[in-house]
Amino acid sequence: MGTCFGKFTKSGKFHLHVTALDYMAPYAKQKVWLKPSAEQQFLYGHHVLKSGLARITESTNTYDGVVVYSMSDIPLGFGVAAKSTQECRRADPMTIVVFHQADVGEYIRSEDTLT
Image (cartoon, rainbow, N blue to C red; front, side, top):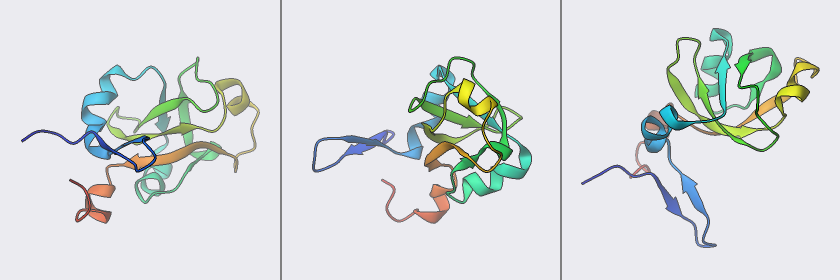
């Protein structure tokens, strides 16, 4: 018994599962908070657009791993920063700022394949 944090691929890379979110979220250095209007889109598996970004950790660099939170500090999932904090400030509202990796909606969408 235990919690599955992820799986190794055939090429030797480790892919995190959403089941690790509750353990990783308190220790995340880079965080992103979504506006309420963008939460549902993220939970459906879409990337985060600049228009849905409420806050971002100041020191976030491009391609850093981030934990995605709601405005009420509930962890929703994790992803990869597509833009740094500085680039996000001057980005177009339709620009992708966080690439989706995993979210809590996967419990329902992929319930048969999560182990």
